[in-house]
Structures are given as C-alpha cells and as structure tokens.
Length: 159
Length: 290
Ligand code: SF4
Ligand code: SF4
Ligand code: SF4
Image 1: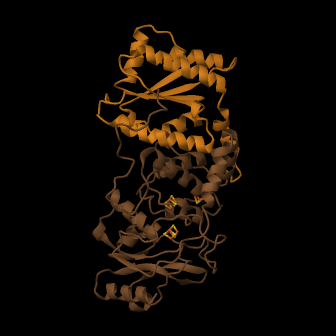
Image 2 (image 1 turned 45 degrees about the horizontal axis):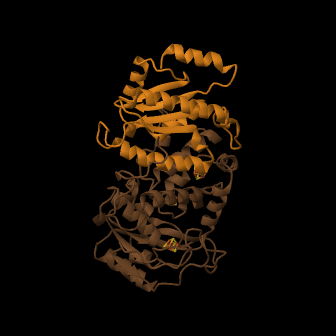
Image 3 (image 1 turned 135 degrees about the horizontal axis):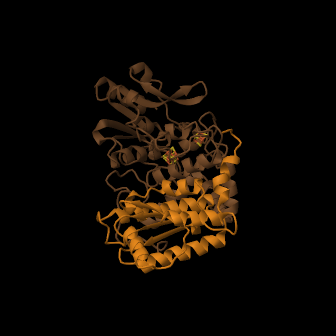
C-alpha cells in the first residue's frame, strides 16, 4: 500500500473508528494479485498495510502476534491456492500451523474473526479487493483491539 | 526395586552405560539421581512419587549431561514418549541411550507427598493414560499396577473454558499469564523444548517481549503452545515447575486435542510415526480459509 494510503488512515484515526489491518502475503500469488488489483484500479478500503513475504510458509504466527502488539485491529494472511505454491508445499505447511494457531488464539480468548486467512492467486485481483473490503467491514463491526496492545498495563509481576 | 537396582548395576558393570538416571529418596521426597557406581545404583527406587520426567536429561541442549557419556534413563510411559519424540524429530538416535521402562499405575501430583494414588492425589495427567507399558524401551520392569483412578480434571476444566465467552476466556488467561515472571522454568524442565536457542531469547529482532507483562507473557505462551503442537507428551512438568502456578497443562492438552481432531495424530512412543508439524496432507481441512 502507498504512503498516501497510510496517511489517509492515520488522519481518520482520530475521528470515526478506522480499522488498522496488517496483511502478510506471499510474493508469488497474493502480492501479485494485490498488484493486479491496483493496476486494474479496483476500488477497495484503504485500511490495509501489506507486508510481502517469500511464501506463506514464511509467515510465522508470531507476525500476527506482533501486529496486534503494535496496535493492529485485524490481520490478513494470504497466499497461493493449494497446488499453486511456488515452492510446492509451503502453503500446506502453513495451513497446518495456522489451523492450530487459530485454535490457540480462540482458546486464549482472542476472537479468530480478527484474522482473515485466504488464498488469492496472481490473477485474482477482484478477490483481493473483496477479501480486503470484507475484512475491513468485519473488523469495523468488532471495533478497535486496543485491549491487546494495552495489556502491558495489566501486569502484577512488574515490567 | 531390586530388579531395577540389579539391572542398573549390570549396565554399569558391563560398561553399556556410564550413568543410570533414575529416582532416589531426597530430603523433600523423591528426586532424580545420576547413578554411576554400584553404591548409587542401590539407591534407585520407583514408586508413585516418581513424578519427574527424566527423559528431559536426554535433550541435546543439555551438553553437560551428554558429556557424562551414554545414559540409561528410567522412564514411565509418558517419559518414554518424550524420548521417542527426540528420535522422531532427529534430535537423538535410538542407540544414543538405554531406556529402562517401568510399568506405571499413575503418579502423585506432588513428589513430596507420601500418599496412595487416589482420585484426590493423582497427577492430572494420569487418569485415562494409555501408555502405562511403554513399548520403545530396552527393558521393562515391574508388574502392571491397576489403572490410575478417576477421570481427567483437565478435560473437565477445558470444557468449562470452552463454554465461556471469548471475553471471559481472555480475562481468565490474561490474569493467569500476568503472573508469569518469565523464569523459563517451564521451558528448562520440558523434554520437548529442545531448541539450543529459544525464540524467546532472541533480541534482534525481538519477537517475544521479554519483560514479564501480560502482553509479552501472552506472546510467549501462545508461541510455546504452538511450538509444542504434536510434541508435548503431556507430562505436566512445565506446570509443576512453574513457581506461580499457571495452569499450562490446560493449554497443552487443548492443543493436543486440536492436533488429534484435525490431523488424526496422537503423541505416542513410536518414533517412526511422522510428526504432524513438518508434514501435511493435501486434504487437510481448510474451512477457516476463504
Ligand atoms: S501419564 Fe501414564 S505413564 Fe505417565 S505417570 Fe501417569 S499413568 Fe504413568
Ligand atoms: S510442554 Fe509441559 S507437559 Fe508438555 S512435554 Fe513439555 S513439560 Fe511436559
Ligand atoms: S515457569 Fe511459570 S513463571 Fe516461569 S516462565 Fe514458565 S509460566 Fe512463567
């Protein structure tokens, strides 16, 4: 996402709630798909900042935790469809890890609806736009996730 | 007991191993002992106070133990699963050590107690245990005692948590985890935390905040639970070692259940069965991915 987009989001933050969403996407499919969405001038919510990684297999669930720690209200994780991984199997490994991580989050009490997992191919610019819009409106409904970032204050053991 | 001592003496005398790691009387109940002589071997015991998972001494991260030479380790079924896990994940080779298995009727929650194993005193992990006669061992000693009494309190507690709203669960875990002082005892005692360098010690970049506040603690325990998926043998040692009483077993058992349901994998003492993380199936469920 462009700097201009980021600024727009910052500016709006003071007024009505504008979700801040971090997206971790793979280089080969979703990033290219998001690029296509841009070059095709597909309209979508400007709330998402994209971090490009070589493969979904490289998207460590710690990235998601870190995004929430830094104040993200929602997270998108997206990569190649099954069968399409540039490295053959990175997405299959990621799928297992995220399946478990999602359950851990849910058991801890973090609403799994804060995260969108999707497969978006290089040709699915339209789908990327839909994933973004749907995620933004869902997170808008859930409200800010300051509770996580502010956990630092909920401490009895000293910091 | 005599059988155990004789076997230990024989292994030491033959030079099959340099040290036998087992249990002995200590000042505060049962403690681990590293027996290298016949006199030490005569101190070996096994009874329901033998709570500790001694397979942790096989961890490749314990270089000072490895330096002692080949070990024989006294293992219950749950401990044997940890030894198998190290082989499964290419941390150790089967020939690196000797396993002295003991048939088990459950242990006490507290190795300092001296009570019978009853529903009230049994360790949380034992009811329903299916590995009371470990298969991977080189020697298997003792008669099989009756099964541990009662039903799993952990399963009941997990069901309670599952029934809560996410907000209630979040309040429960954040207040539990806010107590964590990040002493890392849970990691140090764990046989399956075998990384030479733990991600929570890395500082460039620092993925896990090291200050003991609720946010960093949550990151630490969510990450550890994930890293233990398909690994944790449910020995409960992490929770026993925790100085502030955080119910880590709830988290571990919950993850074990998810792994069983989704990937049809239950931790066992069969090292040939591939770990669920690091493998995959094309048809794994992906209902959460759009
Ligand atoms: S979990 Fe099983 S093998 Fe381990 S102490 Fe309990 S009954 Fe024995
Ligand atoms: S995480 Fe805890 S229960 Fe699981 S193997 Fe490690 S010490 Fe045992
Ligand atoms: S043993 Fe307890 S206090 Fe220490 S790091 Fe582990 S959970 Fe935290």
